[in-house]
Length: 343
Image 1 (cartoon, helix red, strand yellow):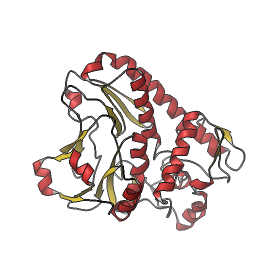
Image 2 (cartoon, helix red, strand yellow; image 1 turned 180 degrees about the vertical axis):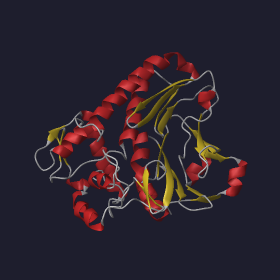
Image 3 (cartoon, one colour; image 1 turned 90 degrees about the vertical axis):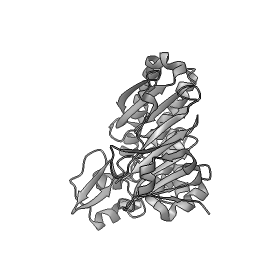
Image 4 (cartoon, helix red, strand yellow; image 1 turned 60 degrees about the vertical axis):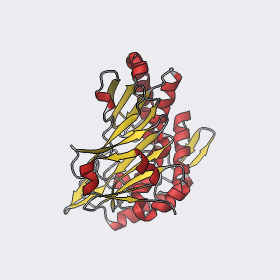
């Protein structure tokens, strides 16, 4: 089982010339790291990033009863609600990625997420009935969201939005922009494994992100080298799940069937921005190897690593991902490394 593909801030944060600060936000841990060239600004930059992320959480979280997203669900079938610019923008982007996914992701999947117990309240560890799932499936259709003039409307009572597949990536990009505006040239922003880097940690070096062993979360099997501006996001069945009769059910729901995605343990997407990486990682997880070629054809600028849910471990990756991933010798001998293309 791939506990978590990336070990956050790998090698560089252990070096004294780099400064970093971490805090809890948006249901996870956020970390800001500054390169040696601007490390003296760590306190002021972190304070600005934290304020930004906390504001975004207040607007986008389904767990906040007063958020725009919660109010949108409360007013489903009743009336449109006004949105902030960020809430409107992230909803618009989510709809675009849902269109691209061909049904593998859908921002209106919230009713099914709640049914399985992965929403605002924890579930009872039970599998919903087929009938209960069938009743909710008609509510899942991102095309029915009406966005106009900084307002949003869900036309049917019971519809709701879950931004879990894009909000963290969007927040990382907004934090990235904030750091650039503050004059920072060398930094990394990480929010629960959704991260983006700028510049270098120090001269003649690049940011390196550690890769965890799929079967042993305490072991690093290699590292990914990231150039300035690039972003990574991961999705997997290893962080939130329920187990019923020795069967694991992930929190990632296939909106076409109403059941948790099966067959893939973890996915990591490399892209030019964190919103794209996050917005596509769920689709790749749901589609797995079967649908990966189609998604790659639709998204030629991204690279991906897919780890199927089987043993011995297999790492399927695009040539672009293979070029930046360096596995340790022991692991490269034990795992199958296979190239994945859109052709």
